[in-house]
Image (tube, rainbow, N blue to C red):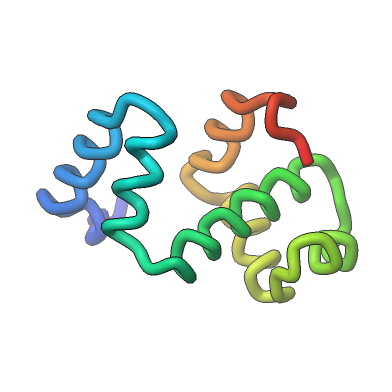
Length: 100
């Protein structure tokens, strides 16, 4: 298995920080402090794309609904199908409560 170059002590600290948050408001506040507006919007868009892909929607529909580029949709699709299962875990846990 190749070395995980992303998993540094700083990344582990970020993970602990995210897990320490108690609700959506605390999480939103940290995201505002850590990320640019564009970064938050991009992450939200990717999650929306993942939800639509998991629901079986086609790229053209996903682009029309989200405005995501074909490259972004393809990257999310690759992660959804061959990645670390982060999207699948979150989508499974969110269930239909946030369906679009």
